Length: 400
Image 1 (cartoon, rainbow, N blue to C red):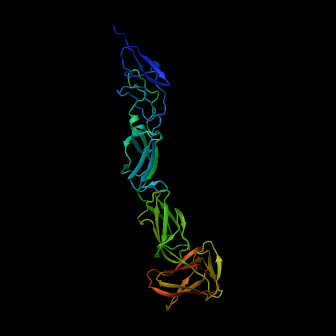
Image 2: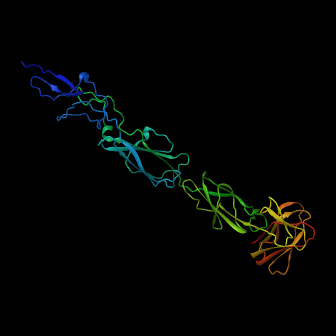
Image 3: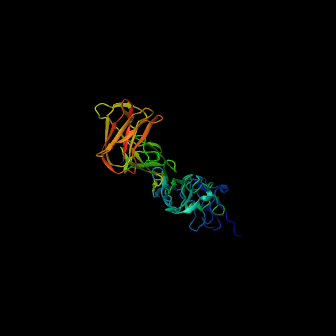
């Protein structure tokens, strides 16, 4: 009567090394197990496929590959500006993954894009590089956050803790086979240009062709409907410094001026229209004395250039050259008891009398010598005092 096979398990240097049998059994046909079938602890390896014999039978427990691939975002197209903004609603992310331990398993990817800053497992979806997102809404409240993680495709499909066969235990652990520190890119999308506004500028007064500035450096107040916008301004085509809020326009020179303002938001969108961002006004000229010392200069914070001229001498004269003048306006402090002048342009036959006295004190009064409907005149404008002993105070002149 044949005897039953006797099996003996041998463990050498931490490895299960074979099967010894009597009664004619061939060594190596049955899985090798250690005492009590205890699984191996996690060790460095590049695959979680259990080792098998040439006959396909497991010869030992699987190993937990504890080194997932690393993920890198290599490009965002188009690239955002320095503030992290894009002016397009289509964007493409390019990314890659790599093993750090010689692993040759294929790598796949999962991506997610959100605009609330939260990353949840149910948002992950399989993706390939490059990944394009189209028709995105502007991210006014929060930026878009793109996340991508690389996955060891082969090992991710294996539960390393599962037994690969009879009497063979699985690995003690099965750590995630994906990059748990996903690569992240944050970007804001803004495709809409801001609207620009000139909220205040020299006011339009009744009876005058244009608003008249009360300073040689008039002030304007600028705004846009997108916070953080920057502003570009020009006066008659020449760039001038400006910013949100109150801006002082310096060095303009006398004459009619057109201010144009355009706001640019953080994404680089510039307001293409000037419907609400244009202001037209006139800047007076500052009168200067040149009549043999018959005028004196008095400082005043209300004056156009910080001072005005005063005389009490009859015949004292001021001169200013005007070209193609219709409207002519004198500017200066007024009040009861002020004197009078007469004005003539070029070769005009008649002098135009101007009474400077007013019922009440006005720190900067406008005296209309010629209105906007007057015929054009070119030549030297002479302003001659006709009163004697009464104060004549003049600050500026608008001849346009």
